[in-house]
Image (cartoon, rainbow, N blue to C red; front, side):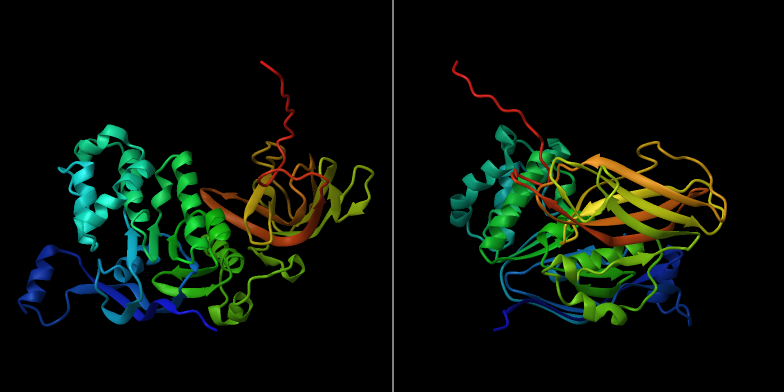
Length: 416
């Protein structure tokens, strides 16, 4: 049985008129000119998607892709030029946190002001006040004007209000990028609670690890258009290509592959792109005796090999390795620039073998290894060849701890 639709976006467009001079706007309004004096900018163009009740959906895209614009239309802050939005449920939104706050009012006064603006009575806000203040952790500053707050305090209060009013739909727009690490951890824990409660979350962020970890589905926008939607890992792979100007295939070509989140690591396919000035020709893993392997015991050493053929002269190639889980979460990685291991130009025809040797302290499980050859040509970052999810490595463990890797702690307990 298909879940109920919480948010329906149909053929949404938002167009702005841009004028070179303020006088042009006036002349056009007063019909003092026969030709248009403006240029049209399509912040959104014919965007459609559905979000079902209980889903956590991410929206990603480069700056100017229309992410914040679409959230403002969904929450009623902006009106669309064309198209429709239907929302089924009570929304709490943290768009540009604290945008509705009166800077002269105290934090407490703003809680009541914003609470009543989104439909709560004073009695209902009274009942939620302790939870809001406990989450915000700003102490007696709640009685001071918010114009005296630090940016961290401001974010804490605004997000505490947004997340503690028991919304059916929570919309978050880069809200957590300002708070400290402890506050972010608390917010993400709240996300987990909301997901367990079956609430709907719409999440915009540039943090690809958070998108991969928390989202059931991802929508990718680029220059006001929907480039695609589907499983987080697949959409993040395309987004990485967009970021370096390497994405060319139309969304329809890959859409079928994006519909399904891989349940098994064997279902994950490698993704590659680049300018072709260098080519990764072979990748493999060996044990300390030099034997090729695809599994390693946690705590043992292994070496990851990458063989590269230089096709054209490159000024200073950077060779990179990273580990991801099957959902696409970046676990760890490094490159020759970070390690200061190789900072030399390469000539066409040269062949290089790059090895990364380390002790494996990752938790037991399945991991995907990705490789890259990049570099700077002048001030421009260039991708020569990237090969995502090229190898599978199984880590076998007799003892797993919390998180992604083992801290190898030595623990003692004594009477005092």
